Length: 286
Image 1 (cartoon, rainbow, N blue to C red):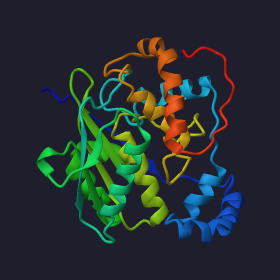
Image 2: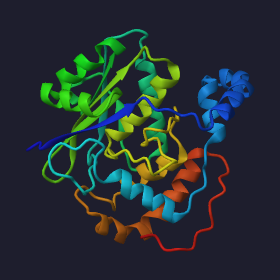
Image 3: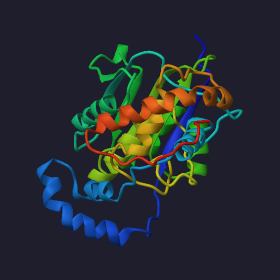
Image 4: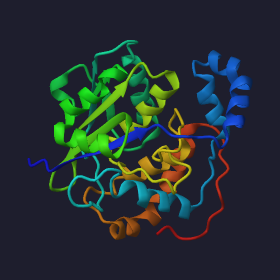
């Protein structure tokens, strides 16, 4: 097996003045409700503001921007599907306090419940893991990045961005992801940890690009969610449909999307177990 590249995805510190008043007000309103169900008021406020209805063009356009390319490119640009084609097993190394291993497990369980055709679970066996999550203090983030990605790439990451958390994966010549690494700071606050954990774990599954022109996705450095939002559930379910294979080009994916997208819409609706008003879009999937 030849591993050819490691492609990092990074969460940077965004400035989000727009909508701040709405989020603040909603946080106050939702505080008691969210505490009762074990979710932070800040995440509840973002759920309240979440857009959940998208037409075909919005979903397809977002998928093409997020699933191809990479936020920070090492080597030549890659315009092919990258994904695991085997069970994904996640192992956690804890080097910080508070101990957030259980929260990582909850994120993995949530992803498993909301992405069809993806066999993902936690493991206590480091030898069988193909995704390793390292939990660190913020002060140790840069050092851990150097240890995981090498000094040269760590310097490139530091020059280009100021990461709060990081993920990367290695793929083979067939664009199959063979291993991935995720680095999360545990002491940046509950909301930031949740936001980082979801984004980086999902990017480790293949959608490594961030794009500021897609306003509904967590794969946008100006967007923070803290949970697995509906739009990104569409993207991951398209990616892990068996008809979307590692190494496919945009044109090849476009040919199968007319069959894939209706099935994805049905799955996402059922997985969320609450009524969703979908846009009545009659245009063919491209």
